[in-house]
Image (cartoon, rainbow, N blue to C red; front, side, top):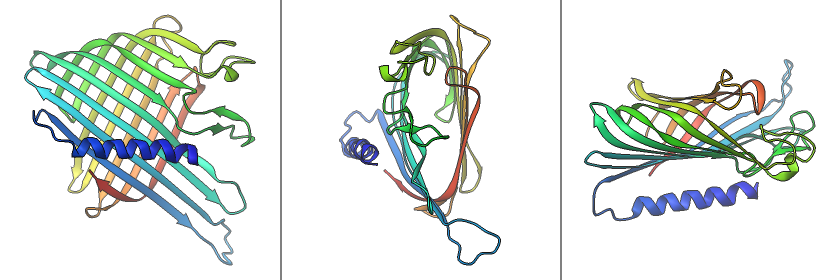
Length: 280
């Protein structure tokens, strides 16, 4: 748990420092949300059965964007971590994510921009084999994913944009002990990294479904030219926030991933709960 708390506290403190900094140019806009989601069930003499349990998730979503003339530079940091505790069982991790996105655009014509993007993804804590709950299958920076490349951006607004990057470099990194006896996350046995070259398409759309209900969609595609280009990686994320008041909301998050280097099938995750939100 301490491995998670220390980096998260550093991230949050740095975000507050940026938010309070003086911006004399007025070209920067900054906004962020800290969220704590919780759900709990308890039973006493409940004949239908059930086990006492508690689950909690914390998350930080922070944007810092720059606009000046024909230039746009959008940046986003996402960090989240979740735990669940069932009576009689060990505490288990339910969410773990650390991601940074950066997208630079230079006006071309209309809604189109020449662009360059960078994406970094990893996790903060160790992941355990679901079958044994003892064997480590991942940890901080293993795996770590990097994507970057030039492209063209179609951007109607900060809430509706699509970036097309036909020459995207992708780098996967893992610690050497994960590939000691075989390949891991697409990295060959005995190696610590894997390089790919392909095409990436990244879309973002956020809208209000109704008053106090916002829907955020993020959809990413990637195809590796160098190996099995028909096996397109997919990452779709849906976040629905139903605002109750300034500090409380009901939050629903769904994510599905297809990446045959990690798992030959769809990975899915969903989280729903009452949220305590703090904007900064």
